[in-house]
Length: 178
View 1 (cartoon, one colour):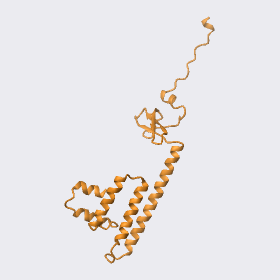
View 2 (cartoon, rainbow, N blue to C red):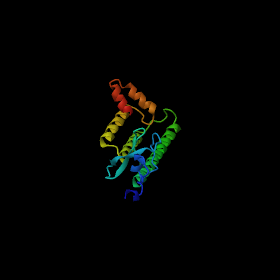
View 3 (cartoon, rainbow, N blue to C red):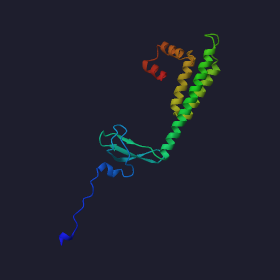
View 4 (tube, helix red, strand yellow):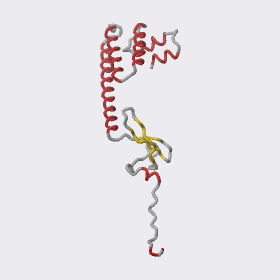
């Protein structure tokens, strides 16, 4: 009776980390390059979407990969940041060209022009999503530097004005610089 039964077949033993990743067998750890990775929960994003988290069994590095819509949003944001940085670089180059054209000390910077640049900068910060508190504090710092006689278009002038402030602590100077 028992001889009629076929011999038991043992399924091929697969490593545990490959069993968990049937949907994505080509994933590798970005730190060590190992394919010994397993799923390690979900990351919940503010827009109510979720991203799968992974854990490397070799180096214990936890990571996630963006795919689909999230990756497309990320690419769009990166492209937008690059475009904004390029536009900002153009503005800085234009300002530098205008200051190079003037002879040293021949013309003073127009206060309205400087205030206009400050307003442009603050509006740019608002569009980039900086908090209102950050924008307000930077506005106060820039206004104070202008009152102290700093030329905001010249980094040397700003550094000189900051260095001359004896009543400011080292921490305050560091905050103004950054």
